[in-house]
Length: 368
Image (cartoon, rainbow, N blue to C red; front, side, top):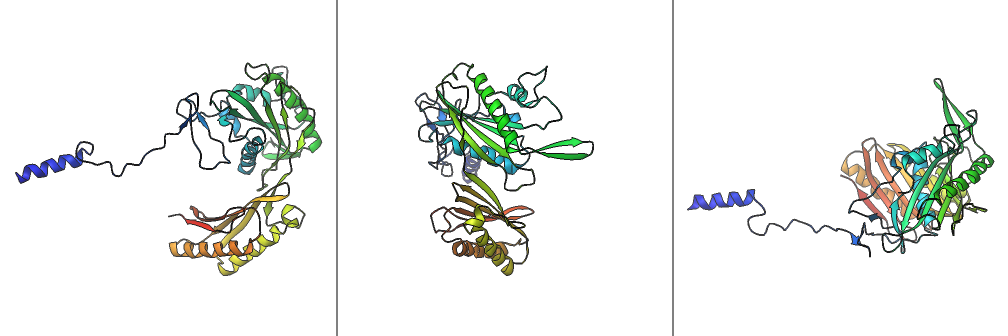
């Protein structure tokens, strides 16, 4: 009898779904929210972020995905994508619209538009003369659906232009500067051509289309490029008569060789220097301390500091993280924007310290 009971118990352990209440460790999965049309959304934990639409219960990537990531650095790519979403808020509120990756411009269309104009490709938006630099580097599309989750309510287009054009000449790379005047001359022509072409597509005849112009920085610039102008084409407009200037700036710290920028004017550059000196004096095994600040309308929005350390044991990283947290609390007191410190090693992230904008509480996390 005892043998039979033990056998039954063994079978129960092998077949977890068949014996007793064995669902204690199963967590409830959030399957998303549904729109009026029945489309599933990602939901959101931050009200300033768009909910994305998942038409068939799966996230739908861009129709031109393979052509999207072509800027010359991750810094430029990040600023290009994040900035377009930020500028879209002005026309498409996250409370009223759902986000979807661009579905109107496919890979072949974008490839032909970004090429040089030629007899074989009269759709090209770059100079036909190969002696001239390529100016228009990328076009990024974001779609915004109305509250039913089905109707296309508008589109945002980001146009990325080269301020430096790189080309290979044998084994050498030649860099050619592109002036703001050259960028704007191409922008006026390219934007109007794209709007005219898109208005011919069914469903796009009258919807608002946000157009934002991004100036790509040199590939060794760790601050990355920025948006310089934006406008909205309404009521079926195929031309933009006037752009609104975007007042934003990315700065990299420390500032080499002096110079004037938003961080020197508001004192953040000096605060960063004090922070860097403090942690380097008390914790000398550091290989680098750098930062990037993002400013909008001359106000600091985010300051991201990266610290490359040579501390490896859990106690070393813990002590270092605690010290950094106290320095952030003290040195950046009164700084309006969000401050985040990423503690890194050659093996990957070790810890981070954060203080949200307008708050005093320091949040820290140490990775295993």
